[in-house]
Amino acid sequence: MRSKGRGKLVVLVIALALIFSHFGSASMAEEEREQGYYVVYDEETNKKIFSTARVLHVGDQYLNEENLLYEVVKISGDKAYAKFKEKVNIEAALNLPGSENVAQISEDNSFVIEASSAKKEKVIAIYHTHSDESYIPTDGKASIPHNGGIFKVGEALKSALEEKGIKVIQSRQSHDPHDSMAYQRSRRTAVELLKNGPDAIIDVHRDAVPAEEYQGTVNGQPLAKIQLVVGRQNPQIEATNNFAKQLKATADKKYPGLIKGIFYGKGAYNQDLSPRSILIEAGTYTNSRFKAQDGANIMADVIATTIYGEDYAKESAPSPGTTTKIPGEGRGASRALLWILGIAALGFGAYMLISTGGINELSAKVRRFSTREFANFLGTKKSVPKENDKESKNVDKEERENEV
Image (cartoon, rainbow, N blue to C red; front, side):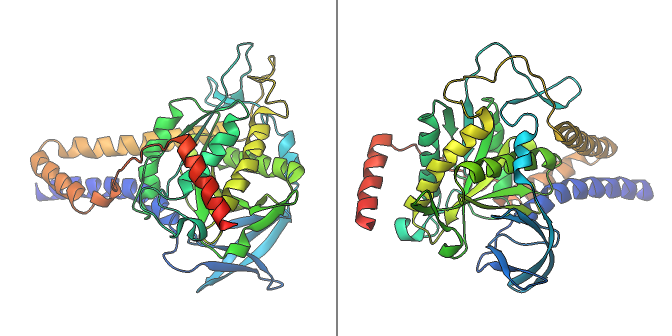
């Protein structure tokens, strides 16, 4: 009897370990440094490639502004070294099927471009996993819990997209504290936003590296550059990467210097939820927020052009008559579904094995765990009410004039 009880306990522990290792490892991979940042150098030339405040891992990659791809091979203290992999033909991404259309799911679970004669409303969703992120020169602090300056950058992106005839849903839900579990909390927000059927979902952040890392000029206008982030632990990374490269290719053609690069980090960043999910870094904490907003204004045209095509203002939907698969997206969706079903089946099997006895005690332990050890998973859920747009714009105008 004892051996049978131990067997049930072992199965339960394995099931819980698998579940927590999946979610826990992803959240740990998406961590940021509490202090300082990494400087990444070319292992051959010792030339600086980029800096990042995200926790680096061997295997992370970076596509720089010149579209040279590097892979991190060594990390030592605040320094990391990467090897050159290849020169990427970024413009080739624009020739991939679906760069100007909206992805739908077909009967075989592959994502396809489904164009119908019916006009479809253009919708984009925006949220902020790190809702405290702010800009010291403008906001006075690097972090303002529940109401960071990053919301105003999201508002700038929203307004610029709306001026182009696109409906934008921006969540002002807080996901504080700014810790390794923030992406698990923001996942619930992303799921809610996806119920509105957006053509893309964007998580807007700012970086935590020196100001010069993001300072740039586009068409003579000084601004804070944009960086894209793609999660390497996303089962449909090929689709996400296609979208990221299409965004950069569009920006390179229309606004050279706007997008400084694409960081491929260990983690998922909730990008498994949608083939058109992307994380953008709008400047860094030592840039002026106004410069980040200026970058976001231009990024809006990049996003609209990438998703809806050059004539996005004329068309409410892609032209009828085309149905084309996007490479890689179907396989990623199927793998994600199988992984989720596998975890669910394993957890259910463990539950069935222990349900014949001791379930009350188990439930009590789970309740104690959820209220004590795991309480921080839920965070301090505080939704920040939307500000009056006119009043917010007036305040921004006054702050910008004062800065000048």
